[in-house]
Length: 313
Ligand SMILES: NC(=O)c1ccc[n+]([C@@H]2O[C@H](COP(=O)([O-])OP(=O)(O)OC[C@H]3O[C@@H](n4cnc5c(N)ncnc54)[C@H](OP(=O)(O)O)[C@@H]3O)[C@@H](O)[C@H]2O)c1
View 1: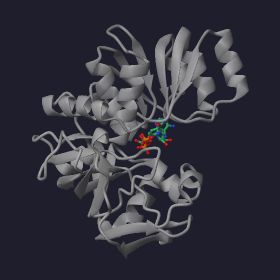
View 2: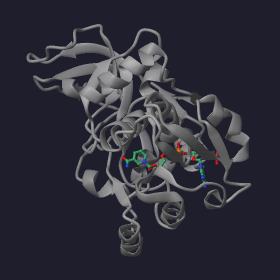
View 3: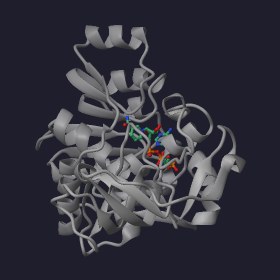
């Protein structure tokens, strides 16, 4: 099979198409013939030598990627939920070595779910790491409920566009932030209000929210602290939270929570159910062929991705 290996950390020239043997799979794993892969900021940061690089550097060959959709082509002896021929999707082995940039991927059965029939492999591959992040933060941690007001930064991006839809599904009042050019996209996802960060500082036009989904950490957390109400919660997508921020949050009785998304088949089933009902939709803005993985990385690096970027083996 073809896979894209990373022989060294650095630029996109380090992504090499390589011929490899089919992956071996364990008794609790399925072998998936991959139809679509989605790309995340963590992919490009790891490629460049940060994010998961330290964690993965001892693997050889190292294959980036966690988000896939495809067809089950073989199953381990203890697999009970899936059969050969099933269409499945999921985020495989995150925080580990997902090996998603390949024509075939071995995945634990408790990391994946059946792909809804009404969506494409591209739309399914998109709704994995980014959708899981939004689901795990908003449903499990924040336990959003009707009447809650949430401010969502980067509402037009991978995580943000699912977060807006999930927050609305859970009954919250949603204020989404993006540049002005993506206003209609964010409102079209169901946001009640939009703030253009290139026209306003959001802390000048919003206040007293129950939750902020903070996509940038560092300085952004100071702005988030200004708009969250006493006793509220900041859900940080990034770990850069200074002692000073934590101290100021404590004074305001604000919970600043950071967590990394984790592979979880039950959560994938919940996301599959929402996709099937049409409550949740993936927006795929760009699709690249397998041999243009580098271009997909460059696109992701712009920080301007609307929805998700897909690569097709
Ligand atoms: N903790 C976790 O487990 C976890 C999981 C997933 C992602 N993350 C992190 O969360 C962050 C977001 O991930 P993602 O996949 O959603 O990224 P993404 O898809 O690259 O986000 C791109 C979006 O960000 C918007 N944006 C850029 N600058 C902005 C600003 N100043 N204010 C508001 N929006 C802005 C852009 O909108 P415009 O084009 O309109 O500017 C674009 O639509 C990344 O840093 C990622 O590493 C963490």
